[in-house]
Structure formats: structure tokens, C-alpha cells
Image (cartoon, rainbow, N blue to C red; front, side, top):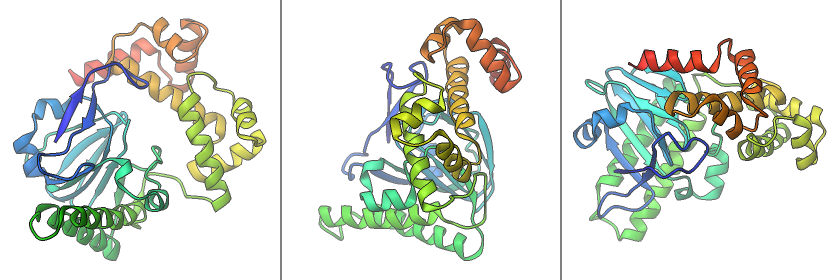
Length: 303
């Protein structure tokens, strides 16, 4: 199913990375399995350790209860809930005993570009959990079951046709998952213009947050006025541009503190701060606690 990769790549090298690995005889880029199959095949201890997959997880819970943590936020899933974690997010499973449902693992490149854009699969800041209801819930469930059934039938179609059917069925599922109705822990989408501006800004922040925390730098690089970036980010993400940048820096700091042994000075250098005292002041102002106190609390809680 998956293969662990330990080399130091990406923003937080101490966190184990997991690369997608297609099952033998199966198409590359997508896998569909039940939680019962996941329990039988995966090491429960490995799943419970924070890790950073390089692919999407899309899970619909059918029965039982499941606790799943995504980037320091613990989600408790009930039947009918939909979980979507994106590549690069730090996550870990809780106890899978008694949880029943279906899980789709897929690489972003498996979908066609138009579907990826419409479903905003690259939006790493989208809500991790949604609670579809009524017709929307039935639509998500039907799409998941049809995709699962097609993934399990290898003999009926030539491999290349089977692959295209999987691609189209996954497209239906991710589009329904991206717009399922019901409650979600995220902000509104805003206008088309605001969304386009926000997406450019978000991608620039993801690329450069260790080099700059100044809205003016991003505005200049992208060709916008700072106020335009703030309005677009407020409309889509619910916070201003400066707050958006700072939250991304804090998230990476938390990842490094919780899942690695770097000193505050090394983390400060990694995140572009002049020194450890400046980093500590920033972290305490944003979170209300010091970096060392946060590390102690997180590790003590995990223990």
C-alpha cells in the first residue's frame, strides 16, 4: 500500500515521509480499500505515529468511531463523516478497532487537471472533515462504493480502459467531496477573482514562508497591492494575509517542535528568524506559550 521514506526532504525532515506505492498488479496512482483491509495489512503502531504522506487520503466512515489527527487538530469521525487529508499534512490514525468505512489513497497527478482545479485538490488549507447530509451524503456514499467496486474488478476491461474508468469515478467522488453540503470547519469560497488571487498567494506562501513573512514582499512578487491580497485572503480563508502567513509559520514550527529534536536556535534558522529569541517571541505571541513549553506539552500528551 504505502512505503516509508526517511530521507530529509520537505519542510520538516524529522517527520517520516510516506510515498505512494501501488499494490502489485494494480494501477499506479490510486488505491481503494476498506478500513478492515487497512487494519489487516498495516502496522497499527506505524499508523499511530505522526507521518507526512505524499498523497491524498479520502475516507468515508460507515460505522463505529474514528479519531484522526491532521496537523495538530484531532477530529472525531462519526458514521457518514468525510475526512480528506492532503499531501504534506502531518497526520496519524487513532484506534481503528471497530471503525468501518472505505479509504481512497491517490496522487494528485492521477486526476485530470480540470477536475483537480474544480475540486481544489491542491488547497492544503481546505477543511479536513465535512459532514454531508441527505442527498449530498447519499451521493458521496454512492460515488465511493462505485469506485471501490470498479477498483476490485480487474478482469472485465482492458487495463488502460479500467484505468480511465477509475480516473472518472474518482473525479466524481472528489467533486462531491469538495462540495458535499453540510457543515465544514472552513471559510467560504469568496468570489472567483478573490479565489484566483488567494490561490496564487497561498502557493507563494507555501513556497516562500521560510524566506519572508512580509505581505508587501508577496504583493510585489505577485503584482498585487497588499490590500488586494488581504481582501482576497479574508474572503476565502477568513483571515488577513499577514495572519495567513503567520499561521503557516506557526504550523511548521509546531511540526518541527513536536516531531523532531532541533533546538530553538536551529528551528529559528530553518524558519528564517534572525535568532532564537526572535523566534520564541513570535511563537509565544501567536500561540500563548513558549516553544519549549509547547514541545513538552505535546510530547507529554502523546506519552
